[in-house]
Amino acid sequence: MPSASESVVPSIQTFPAGKKKDDAAAADAGKESSGDEWDASSSDGSSVGGGEKFDDLADRLRQASTGLSDDEEDLAAKEKQKEQERLRRLGLERAERERIEQEKQASLRAEREELNRQALLVAQRREEGKKKRLDKEKANLAARSRDDLRCPIVVIMGHVDTGKTKLLDKIRKTNVQGGEAGGITQQIGATFFEKKTLEAQTAHLNETEKFELTVPGMLVIDTPGHESFTNLRSRGSSLCDVAILVVDLMHGLEQQTIESLNMLRSKGTPFVVALNKVDRCYAWKTCADSPIREALDQQAEGTLSEFRSRSTDAKVQLQEQGVNSNLYWEMGDDDWMNSDFVPLVPTSAVT
Image (cartoon, rainbow, N blue to C red; front, side, top):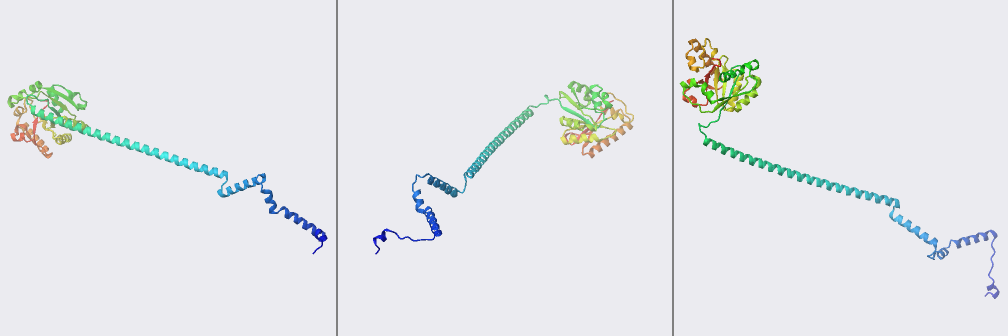
């Protein structure tokens, strides 16, 4: 065992001078970096340096967990807000379009319903008008009488320069034809003949034919015969109750005569044919205001032969157009009752 003097005094080891200094520096560095010394100094939670370290660590952990900085978070939030706003606007626009489309469809349905209602009203009024018209026609037909007739409407048609206006001038004692440019009628003319005028003009004829005039008068429409006035002739033929188709005995059926004939037949208008200008026959003797049969009786045989020849040619030409005709005094009762037969009436606006 060591003595008391050895336990009190520690043993002293000797080192070289350089090595001693190095070991001392290493010992000092070990003491400074020792974990026990850091724990001792940082164990106090109230230390300012330790709190800042913990805050920096928390920030770093939070940034690491989210992966975004504050600026990036704000940008993402703004983009999300913009997208939501865009979707909201799209929804509002779609709702507005749907509202406008619904209003348009409702308006169209209302218009269709109104049009259907108007069409039904028009059809109903048309049916009511038709029924009233038919009832009125039936009543008029039941109440009609030969003692109460209206004035018939007569239209004169034919080729240009066949003497249509001249015939009317002869009856009304005027000279309208002479006042027309070139003696050609340029417009539609209307003349009303009173009953007394008709009786005066037919007085001589009534002595032999024995007929009674029951019409209160007669309205005569004079149409132009030039080819340019087809529309006027068509209108005239649409208005009349009966027509007089004037044919030049010397020329027979001409272009506008055939056109007028077709108009009358297409509309189903009854008509008579006036063989005008019989005074152009060779050696015709004037018989003022005489019925045609009496005038023919006073003609020479040659004149009668020419008249018969030309009237036969006119009948043949009418037959070629599908019209049966004959001189009115040669027609029998069956011919008068047959609507297909047309009477031929020789006339002269001069004699």
